[in-house]
Length: 135
Image (tube, rainbow, N blue to C red; front, side):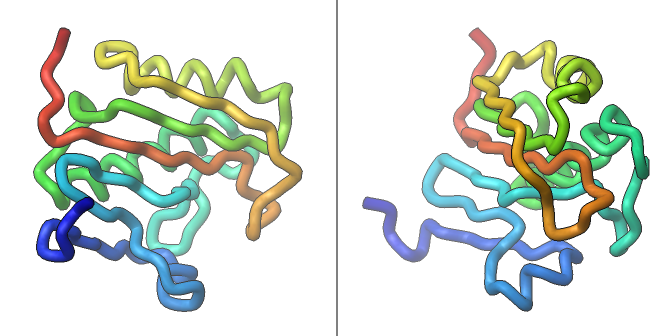
C-alpha cells in the first residue's frame, strides 16, 4: 500500500479539474498517472478537425504534466488513446509513433462516442514509471 506522504498531485489549466475535482497527474510511489488529456492549450482547441495535430497536442499536454515530476517520454510505460472516429486510427497512430517509437509503451486505442467538447477528436492518458530504464 502506498503511504499518503508518497502521493503527490499536480494541476494544469483544465477548467474541469476544479469543477469535477480531479488532478491532472498523480504520483503514487514509482508510478505517475496522467488523467485524460485533451488537445487544449489555455482553453483553446489545438488542431481543430485534424486528428494527427490533436493527438500531438494532447500528448504534449500529458508529457508537460510528467515534467512536473521530472519525468520525460523515456519514463512512459503505457498510453491510452480515445478517439471519436475509427477513420482517424492511422493519423492518431502516426502521431503516437512519432512521440513514442523509441520507448514503445504498452498502448490501447479505443473508439468512443464523443467528448465533453464535440470538436475534440482525441483524448489521451499516460502512465509513467519513475524507475524506468531502457531494455
